[in-house]
Length: 195
Image (cartoon, rainbow, N blue to C red):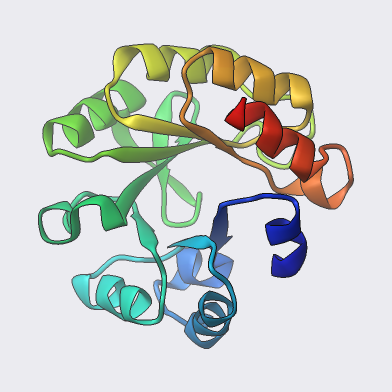
């Protein structure tokens, strides 16, 4: 629960509307609004945010930041926008991972930095939910190559992953399955990143 995240010292809550990612609809907006109203955590929301109207609706619902697959809203909302890049076989996956674009991740990240994006949330699809460790080499490369804040997502499954990502200069990590299975103690992970 959100209260457990707060008690562990977490500062950010990462929410993904999986239905929205596939349909582009905001079916779970009331749930997200309720969560945002109940917590003082920084709430970021992703999944199917494909229009400026949807960006506005989530921000008005209390989200601190929304995650887009494009940078169209950066000029208007600045730091309230993060861009999500889901990577599959060296390409950027789109439409809820159902397809891949023709862009290599290098081309996409270069474009995003040129557009002034400040935060990139990068998910290695091949590692997501697999509990086999995160792609440390990929995130080290991204952190070294770009001035944007890189957030690692996908396969973050141990405190060693957290240590390695921090040492590589990665700005943050998203922990999903590893928290729910007990593989990572959230309070310990938070302390590692704060030290």
